[in-house]
Image (cartoon, rainbow, N blue to C red; front, side, top):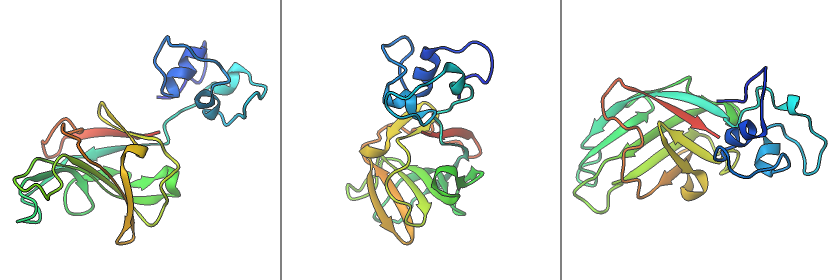
Length: 185
C-alpha cells in the first residue's frame, strides 16, 4: 500500500508496511523497517526518508480462468487462475522484481479423485531461470504465502514455485472473468 507520500507518518506506518502488526513492538532499526529504504544497521535515518516507501515489489491483477479435467487420467478436477494463453490473464504480465521476466502462470489445483495429482496446490512460474530469491511473500486476495514454504524448481525454461496443502482456493472465486489482486513483497 505504501507509506503516505506527505503529511504525518509514524513508526507504526513503517512497521505495517514492512509486514508487521499494527501496534506491536518495533524499532526504527528493525531490519524489515530499514529494508523499506535500504538502510544498514545503525545508519542515521530521518522519518521523511520513508515518505512513499513500499514493501510491495510488484502488484498484478489476475483475471480468473478455469481449465477442467486437466491431464486425464492423472488430474480429474479443475485449475483456477492464470496459465499463459491457456486460461485467464495477468496484468501487466511482467515481473518488476525479476528484471521484467514474464509471468507464465499462477493457478490453484482443485481437489481430484487421484492421489497422484496436484490437488490443493498453488503453482506460480516465471519465464527463465530467475533464482529462488528477491521476494518473500505472495498475497492473493487475502491469502499470504511465504516463498520459503514453496518447493522451487527449474522446468522447461521457467522457474516454478509450488505450495502443497493449500486446501482453500486463495483466489476466493472460481468465476471466469473475476479479477483478483496479487501482491509480491
